Length: 176
Image (cartoon, rainbow, N blue to C red; front, side, top):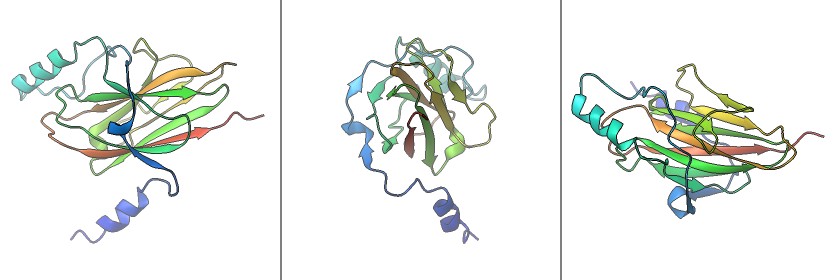
């Protein structure tokens, strides 16, 4: 019945050869301000969980870690987070592009978005707004100096205790 599952997982495997690191080993940094807008994870059928999630998202900043400025795989887990989100700070070199793709068993449960320090979208940020189940986002730095952006991973399901995922950060240098 599930004979296709190993083939499916191989198709979705991250790029080979990239270094791997656990997110718990990355330095903790101040994150962006909490993004505004509707929360797709709220469910009217579970008002207590929805209320807890809304209250936990009222904090000023999203918890964040700093990601090295090269292509890398970052392994993480949702760790029973009530708010359901975590941010990853990336330094984008002048003229470069950074692409982030989430890989995991339940990819459709996640959304990846790119925001600035104030939790808002700005020029160069490309979001995957169509719910295709492919959580990814990218940022193209058109400025002449490096720029800091945050990629926010948002869990779209309530009541998930622990969900492992891998983020593939791909840096493309500036084109001459």
